[in-house]
Structure formats: C-alpha cells, structure tokens
Image 1 (cartoon, rainbow, N blue to C red):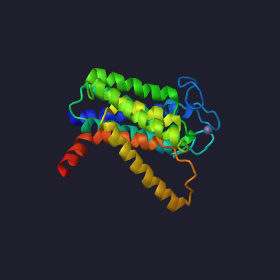
Image 2 (image 1 turned 120 degrees about the horizontal axis):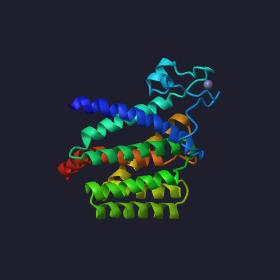
Image 3 (image 1 turned 135 degrees about the vertical axis):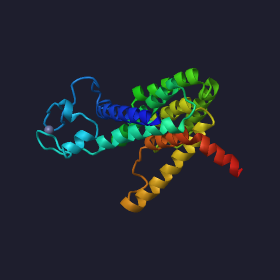
Image 4 (image 1 turned 30 degrees about the vertical axis):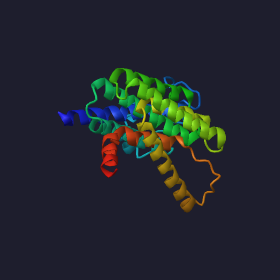
Length: 252
Ligand SMILES: [Zn+2]
C-alpha cells in the first residue's frame, strides 16, 4: 500500500513540478500561466505532448529542443525531481496528517519551490505567491489545527516583527519581501517552530555566504537572496520538527 502512495505522489510531484517551472518563468514576467502553451524560448516551437513529460522528455531529447536544437536548462528537471522528493518526504515525515493536511502540505511545498527559484532569478518574492502561502497557512491552522490558530498568528507576528525591525534598522540586504515571506511562513509553521526555521535559515545563509566568499571570491557587498534560505529553513522544520524537538529536549 505504501508503494502505491510513493508512486502516486512521485508522479503528482513531477507533474506539479513541471507546472512550477511555468510559474517560475512566467509570474515574475507578469505573463499568464495558462496561455500560451509551453514553447521553446528560443524558436517558439510549441511542445507536443511527448515533449512535456517531466524528466523523461528531457532525457529523451538529450537536453535539446527537438526543432532548433537549443540547449534546454537542466534546472527544469531539478525542479520536477525536487518537488517529487519533497512530496514523498512530507508523506513519510509528517505522520498523523489527514488527507486534507497532506494536500495542504503539497501546496505549501510547491509555493516554496516557486518562490525559491524566482528569488534566485530575480531577487523578488512576488506578492501573489506570498499571499497564497499566508492563505494556505491560515487554512491549515483552521482545518488541521496543526498548529492551532493562535500559534499560527503568533508565529506570523513574532517572525514578521523581528524581520521588520532588522530590515528597518539594517535595511541593507534584507528587503521587505523577506519580511512578508517570513510572516507567511510563520502562519504555516506556527510558534515556536518558525523561530527554529529562522535559526536554520540563518545558519544555511552564513555557511553559504562563507563558502561563496572562499570559492567565488565574491565580496560581502554582493547581494544574496535570502528567500531560498528561509524556504529551506522552513522545510527543515516542516519535515523534521518532531525529531529536532526530541533531540533538543534530550540534550537540555
Ligand atoms: Zn527551439
């Protein structure tokens, strides 16, 4: 029975991931995500159904457009595989979730993936997607009561408040988009989970900043989008909160 769900959620993840590629590409450009159909950005060739199969089409086409032979970015497949992987992890690591809870988790994961790649590409976190994270956070609290609504609201107020103060007093580097995003994440995770998520986000940000200084000789002034780290920190808490809290209580 478990195998059935693994296959089902993998396929669902790959298909949703394929749709997220469209969102990542079109939402920042202000284009419709419904029309026109998917096409090669180089020659405009409309993709036929066999060219739209997640990951497999990429392998079959050897990473090139079937018409103009322009290279297709391997990132499309990464987004599809990442979505499927996180769906499977949510299925295994969020036990006790009802069907509707798992469905909300899938929407949450999908929005975080879209926001991560859009922030990497454009240094922006589009309001429409951040509002959807907030909405799904409130719906989750009301439907699943994990977290209950007051914890959810508290998470948003604390996280949003802290980030607002940081962006207000040390405005450089942190945009208002991060303030709104972390508040929306707080609604989904609740307090105190969101604070642990911020801790992991900062840790990952510091490690990655240090590494890029060493490897690329980038200067500290080069902007690094913080949204992907917030999304990663949130997902770490989202998936492993039980294990992490158990570990925390075992060492204190
Ligand atoms: Zn082409």
